[in-house]
Image (tube, rainbow, N blue to C red):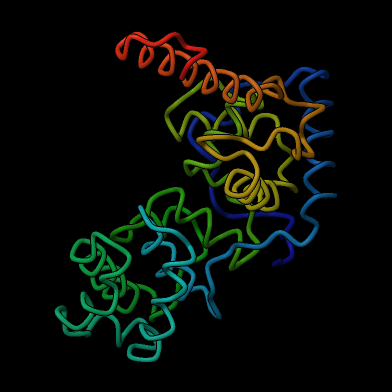
Length: 262
């Protein structure tokens, strides 16, 4: 994982400095961070890349798509168009065909072409190192900018909030918000700046492989001692079991049999 820089020229989420965490909050977050470091000491983004540009393009492609699927597409993409100038001039139909497996390929191709055109025109083909400059590029919002600044440049500009981060942070009781910007504000208030990059990556991986949406693996979770939702897996399994019994009883009534005879 890229070494974390001590300072960043990028601004955190608007309003992020408004709340000071209590000592109890700081202590709980410290324990969560320690558990994440122990569970994922080498946490890194799973989008394959060899440069900030490749990570930027891969992150644009990852919208509504898995990292694994993006990783099957980007080798051919970067072989055909290896830099921003080439991507800006790529025939649109050819670009769309290469990235088609990632979904929403027409909109993504347009974003990639327009983004790379501005990279060439305004930044000499290089990916800028500030939140302000990155978010002026087509197809680049705070989430994408935070990924690139953190993983490619080691700049702790903020915390990446995707669906995994939003879900895990909510289950851990670190936020009650649903808006990504407000979730980021809550997290920035309690997570030390030096941990923003690691926390972003580790929490997303935790959500992808442990604290999953449909059925979290609470029994295997290293954050279980610090999680107010630690019984969620058992509760969901019990609810599913109850629905199954209800369907069995309903089927038995419809067939004229007793539940015991089904």
